[in-house]
Length: 264
Image 1 (spheres, one colour):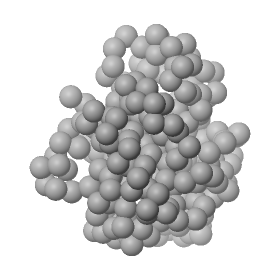
Image 2: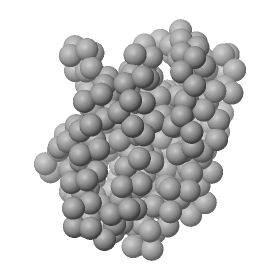
Image 3: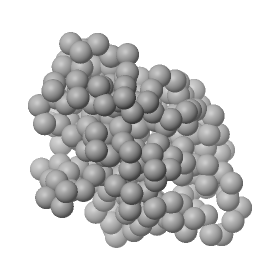
């Protein structure tokens, strides 16, 4: 059982919901980024999503796009992101998911990505623009299922396709709460209740975490009864962007993590 499965089992026993926290690796620079993710893990993040900065994102809104630009300018790449994970692993057992688009992984090499991700201490990967039908090109290079492959389901995903996506998912399923990009608007709880119920009936016990539009403790509190966890990213990146020249940036992100976790 990998760390993601263990974490959800622990949370179920404690009747808690997961806080999945996203930040871009290397933002605003590699040194402070490592300090930020260490602080997030100490402050209550249950699963860390570490974004691999990419020049041409399609699902990320302007806040996360700017974080990728800062990280790329600071020299971050996939190899250095794995080095960050390896350094974090020395002091932290929080599950880590590499959040990426397919292009950086394709350029890195599918087999090398799998081996280096596991060697660094990563537990899963989420590839935004890789649908199940096109995954074999990558996953046939993976010798086993030790690296969880987190899948996305959108509000526009038909029920029969939810079933197909769930069959190829592991770790958890990321349910996008609204159409559009990260950081835009708030979820419609009535619509989200229907979506989570439909997805849960088709995912055979795989945890469901809801993301997009969750930035405040009250959002997390409202959504948590519907899912196994919530995903927050833009809210943390807004803090990093606003305080990128402030020596207290890591502690400010940590305070936000603590407030969100307390709401779950």
